[in-house]
Image (cartoon, rainbow, N blue to C red; front, side):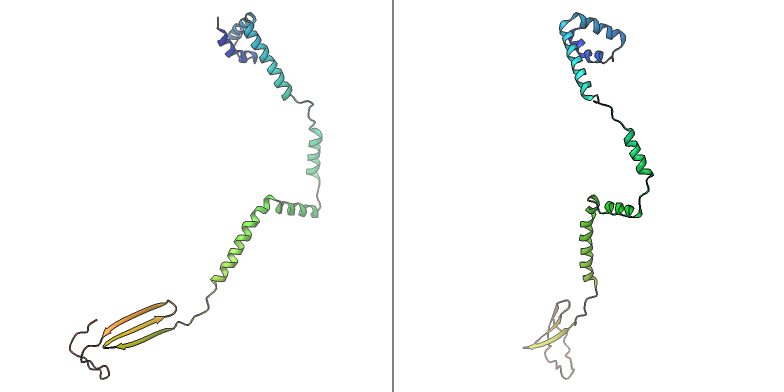
Length: 175
């Protein structure tokens, strides 16, 4: 014979009819003899009745009028105006308008960037070379406006060189 704890574990399955014949007979005979297990069974029965009363529909639902309405709408021809209005409502309904904000932002970015893709107006690329003679040392500067580049050359005339005559001395240049 099984103990009350073992019977209580099997009691729900017995009430639902899920036990085999031999095991169901053992549980039934124990429940009839034990007042505590009998009370447990009555509580399970009340719980089952409560659950079934809540889950059971109050009155059966009539699907026939619903299906007749569906069939009528399928077979019914709409005018061309109604079809276009349905399409417009579908295209501009709330969920479909979600794409419009990113599309407007993207279009604005494209139009803004097109302004920068145009060929820039040609600038005057002006470069100037200046030469400064100071106490035997010469400096030459090259300045270019477009790239904002400045190049400085420092050089020293060799002693005895005459720049106007084109003669050079025998010494090697010093930089």
